[in-house]
Amino acid sequence: MQDFPRINIAFSGGAYGHYLKWILYSLLIDEPLVSPFHGSTSHGKDYISDYAKNAKLFESRMCLGAEEIANNPYQVTITHPGSPTNNPSFLDGIHRISTLVDCVLIPYIDHNTYLLGVHNGLYKPFDSMYTALEYVDREDLQKGWGIDASQDISDLPNWILREHHSLNLFNSWESQCAWFLPNHLKKSNCKFVFISNLFYNFLPTIEQIRQFLDVKWIRDPRDLLDFHRTNVKQQKYKNQDALASQILNSIADGTNFKWNASDITLQTEAFIQRALQQQDIMLQCNGLNNFPTSTDKLIEVFE
Image (cartoon, rainbow, N blue to C red; front, side, top):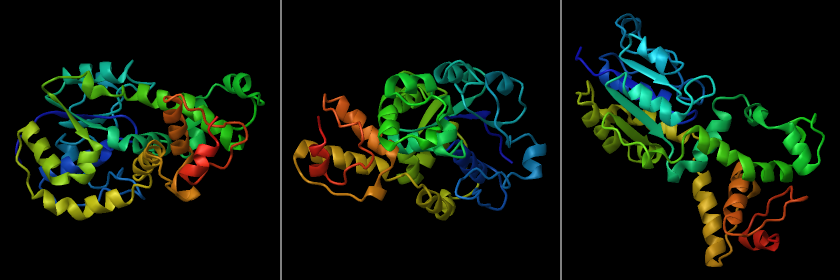
């Protein structure tokens, strides 16, 4: 077994840190290749052998912040910097972690996967969107939209949820992952792994990781491709970014793009509403429970 550096995978919820850990395990540990999937996610842990655990190579659980990493004997660990129970911020957490390990890999949502990241942040760590939104200030909803503060979020009309999302959801998500962190973090032992590259430029991205870690893989990364294709295929929200771009571009171009109501989510509708607000275009809010399904129809509800 080759020596390899002490590595931490630092990522925000839904940014595929567990999947990257499986990739590293499969390419560093000379054992039979085992699927990482747990249901539709790549959160499985069964592939980590007793040998890898006993030899303190791969930690199977999540480390709760930098201090736990400091006292952790494993070579490869994962953590969520900046989560409410961990470090004070995503950026500060990574700065601290970078002083404790040899290499930090940061799987990171990029501009081409922004909405995928937002959806994952809502749906991967929680049982439902409404569980993820328990942080919402009910009195804020009462003041802003005149609803009963005791009302369940799941019972709110779509137009209220959409408008609330447009004003709050994206700012909250960006705060959690210090968006766009690559503009601010420049450390020689930290490497960002952009999700669009990991998904759609897999082999060159894996080679860049190998060079960064200065290791040798025990198998050809091509052996992982069938698992990788399955993982990408299972990503329910991977098309939301492209659809939102098509809709917004069609408004700018004056073309009539059409889509099905089931093609985009409420969160993507809210993203479009927010993008229009940033262009000083206000979308009808009150009572717009059914979002339009063409550019022409969408323009009709501009205010």
